[in-house]
Length: 222
Image 1: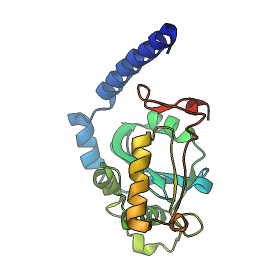
Image 2: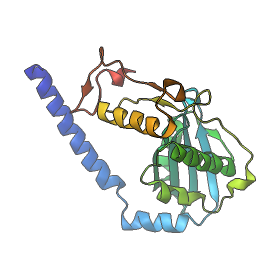
Image 3: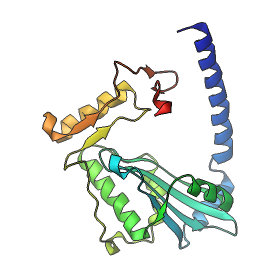
Image 4: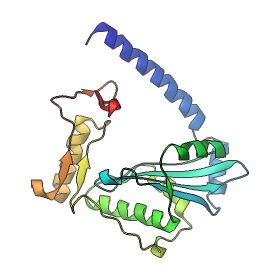
C-alpha cells in the first residue's frame, strides 16, 4: 500500500471516528429520550411503512411510529432479510417530526397495516431462528413498539428463502470470517450438501476485504 493511500485511509478513519462520536452524543438514549420512548410507546400507531424495493434480494425495511408530545416521534425500524439472516438491524428511538420526515423520504416507503408488519417480523424471526440465526441484539427493545398490535389479525404470508431454500447474499460489510461463520451455521442447520442452501459471495479474485475500512474494496460503488 502506497504512503499516500495509507495517509488517505488514516484521514478517513479519523474523520469517521469523530463523526461516530458526534452521532453517539446526539443519538445516545438520554434521560429525556428514554422518557419520550416510555410514554410514547403507550400511544396508538401514527404510521406504519414498508420498503419492498429490494424484496427481490430478500430485503425489506419496516418503520413504525407513535407520537410522544407535539413534535416528538417514537420510531421503530427493522431491516429484514427474508432470504437468510432474519432481523439484520433494528432500533427504537425518539426524534423530531422533521427528522422522521427526512428519514421517511430517503426510501420508497409504502403504507402497510401494523398487524401485517408485525406478522412479517414475527414470522421472519421464527424462520431465521429455525436455521440458526438470532435477531439483532436490540430486537426485544425495538419490538415493544408493536405491543398493542395482534399479528393474528393478519393473513399476510411471505416466502422465506429463495425457491424454498435459504440463500445467503454476503453484504459489503461481511468480512471473510463472518461469511465463513454464516456458511458454517447453514451447513450445521440445513445440511452440508449444495442443494440444501445457496449463497453468493464477493469475488475474492477481483475484490479485497479492507480490514481497516471494514468492507470489501469497491463495494461503495455498488
